[in-house]
Amino acid sequence: MSSPVKILVVGAGAIGGFYGAILHRAGAEVSVVARSDLAVLRERGYRISSPLGDLSFQPSKVYASTEEVEESPDYLIVSLKLIKSVDRIGIMRPAVGPNTAIVLIQNGIDIEPEVVEAFPNNPLISCLAFVGVSRVAPGKLEHKAYGRLVFGNYPRGVSAEAERLSALLEAGGINTQLSEDVVRERWLKSVWNTAFNPSSVLAGGADTQTLLTTPGGEELIRGFMEEVCATAAAAGYPLPADIIDKNISATKKMPAYHNSMALDFLNGREMEIEPMLGNVVRIARKHGVPVPRLETMYGLLQLLVANKASNAQ
Amino acid sequence: MSSPVKILVVGAGAIGGFYGAILHRAGAEVSVVARSDLAVLRERGYRISSPLGDLSFQPSKVYASTEEVEESPDYLIVSLKLIKSVDRIGIMRPAVGPNTAIVLIQNGIDIEPEVVEAFPNNPLISCLAFVGVSRVAPGKLEHKAYGRLVFGNYPRGVSAEAERLSALLEAGGINTQLSEDVVRERWLKSVWNTAFNPSSVLAGGADTQTLLTTPGGEELIRGFMEEVCATAAAAGYPLPADIIDKNISATKKMPAYHNSMALDFLNGREMEIEPMLGNVVRIARKHGVPVPRLETMYGLLQLLVANKASNAQ
Image 1 (spheres, rainbow over the protein chains, first blue to last red):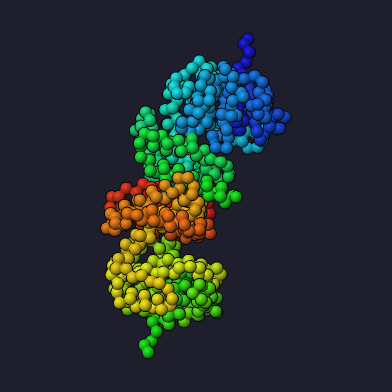
Image 2 (cartoon, each protein chain N blue to C red):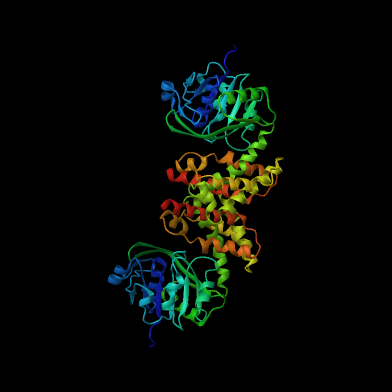
């Protein structure tokens, strides 16, 4: 037998722990770099309840920092939050070897270029997670639903490393979808994320149904989505004509819920403003696409953050 | 000697109490309709500190409701907040006699038509207050600065009643400016109010300096102001070309402060969204002026209010 695939997960929260568990289940050797839950993870690993069964596992190694990593992994899974206070590249650097494939499981648009610049010779696999999983206590995760991972190499294509990762994840029990054009997948997901996430925050942490049932709310959300579609088209990714209607009607059918940015806001955590919204606004400006609605939302969100920081001083 | 001018103030908070005091000082007979501070006002009247001297006074009558008013006044001063939960017309009706001049000291754009419709035969004087005055305790006001009142008849002109009111206010110690075109004055003031008030709320109750010094903030505010100017022009009120620059530079020179809507928001009070913003958006739509920035701000503000109401349930 060949030696197991070596995986290192950086950002060992709900997303990283869950996909780490799936890969462990598939026979990979999974280590993690943890910050807050270090002691618990070293002592007893992850406890993970899931409709897939008990996914609890003990990582092979639990590092406090990538500086401690002796052997670079085959796959470096990066599931850190994409926020200003986290130096993603600096954290990754000590763990990236010449043959390491970098796997981003992170939200947003245009989040890959700085990784390509830092590690130009490593394969870069860019992933979109469709999963409902939460950290309910240190080292304890609840996987509620879904789990599908859509991915491909950045800027395009599907490499042998991506195929191999897909096979492992499928063996671990989740559905994967390989895409020759992962940037397009990111734009498709951004239609929802860029419209709903920041507006839920500016509405005080509103849930999806409040956004859609308040008079004027659906029109507002559609306005944001139209500007995302116009930007995607100008960037070379024309999206299906019915994507807005489909996003709206699918969301109406779901129970009310708080999206990730609303939850960050309500819990006083730093928000992923740039990958969700700021990068879309910058791409629009670069292509001369007018996005006054997104610009307004972006400006107001920056003021909200600045005001909170100034009140905290 | 002729009998004194009879004034009735409806909405006897900071603004109503202050201008009531000025008119009392000028020799008018000033009564008030009070809600929350009724007992205190009946017992000992207003205590008002001011750079103009001690403005404390005992109103001639303190009514709990306009239903109690026996004799209709010469001037009915309306300084109620313009919010959905206050039925301004219903409150005014019992006090308006055939010779009563109605005097609105209220914020916003297009706030007069419903008053004209309800009282088509009464003179209507529309006023803009430039004053820093706060209610610091029941019946107790602090007048800090300014006091100027700009007014004229609606929709235009300056009637004898307006001239007489101006003379009284000047005799009471404040500066007035009569305007043949008060709607234009409202648009001039709206450039600031419509831009700063709602954005301060969406920024979490930010003060003026936070709005202007945060990167992107000034640009955002200028964008709102441009849409207000375009709307005003389409409505027949082209504003001076330098009005935006002047508003921005004047605000930068002032100490940081919270505008009225920010204070309402921070204190959990109902906000004057329609007169400040909603009416501007509706006038823009009527004239086919694109105002995507104001529409976005208006939509988000409505979501914020709806979310707060749904959380309170």
